Length: 344
Image (cartoon, rainbow, N blue to C red; front, side, top):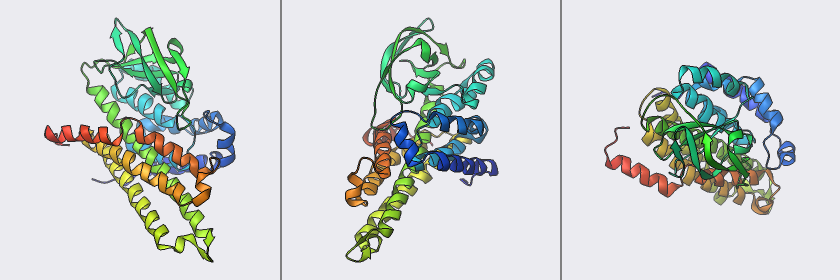
């Protein structure tokens, strides 16, 4: 098991870090409000990063999402990468791959997914009915990947569906998806829930990678602040209580990262990764919220300022805590797999 990035993956991560570092500034994020940064998305797409996900694999996408999370950049990279590029590349027919991947790769199309399946959507004769309370980046989407009650996967044109704006804890341009006999196209030609399970595991892994970046960014801000903020003539960072809190946050962040890398590596290697994905998602949920709370706490009174950059990490961390399953739910799913003797 080797999590060392390939040269191509490392180059993509460095490119993403440069673009995100240059454009996802505090001033631009403030100006964007809760909307997606269209200029940043165009810059990432022009650099070929969404298109590269097909070759970089899930681990490559995780590396890109870590960089996004560090600066809480408001772009649909996670959703398009996992529900669009990887889902179509792995499970679409040859015709679907040829038709959909170019636009998803160059950023002119955005994908998202109505995951996890809740049983609220039914399919009949290629038409879907039902609703999903909120879907991330739905207001930006061209395509929505929707699992039905039987966990078959369907592609729905966003323009054919009903979309009602929803504001979340994090600024993810979310919306409520309403389907009323909406025409849909089945993804791939494989029967059974296998593709759904694979996409869900990939999504949990990808968003765990995003959480690793959010936590790393929050911790970096806390370290920088406590190193210069003085109390009673000494930097806060020299206080043992501060050091211990930061050390715990660092270990939690590394735990999210290493479990996410393992899940992504197993997925790319074609190995069963359901248990690894649940483990990564559990760490992202439970440890992630601890880290972003620590980030705010270590800023003292400044951490209570809603306009302070560290507050964005707090909002993203709390949103990611619940997305695709909160800690207790994930632990229950993992327990079921262990009880069934799942080898992964």
